[in-house]
Image (cartoon, rainbow, N blue to C red):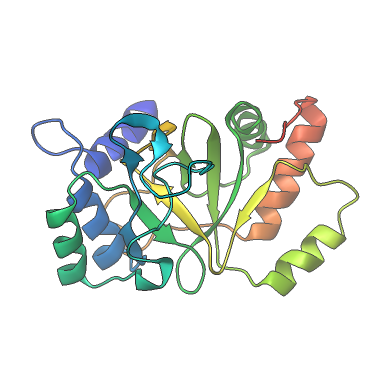
Length: 221
């Protein structure tokens, strides 16, 4: 299974010469999977830990839309090619919600423990995007009303959980951001029309339960 997962990562994040090919990945997301994408702001070339946007206190350096804005996200191949032809190193940003997946993210260390617990429990997960600081579990699109009802029914929800729903965004592999490389922890199967993703209820229930049972704290990040 590890060999298969490794092959999936290579297929989605590397060119024949072994180097990341952002435009190829962006076209796969946009045209094959119908996920609307756009180029991210990119890190500041003078300091990789800072963002290229005007905000000196940016908390997601390079990993967010700036110019163009989020509403420009598209599945049009011509637009995607034009963007990355002009900005070949720009991070790939997914506009979450609508017909595209949403996500639930949490800090990397508790996320790794949670995924291990979910594997032991036999829960089927969809793709998982990992950056050095946070992991994001992709889920089916949900409404704010649906999310509100889900969280209201919980006795406890870790404050470090973040929800990337309608109007949100998420950097996708193989982007390079101010916090490091974005990669697949669990990669989608190559060649599929659109990757399978679970319901948000199943993921939130399982993650909260796993964090509670393993006793792993999820600090605010």
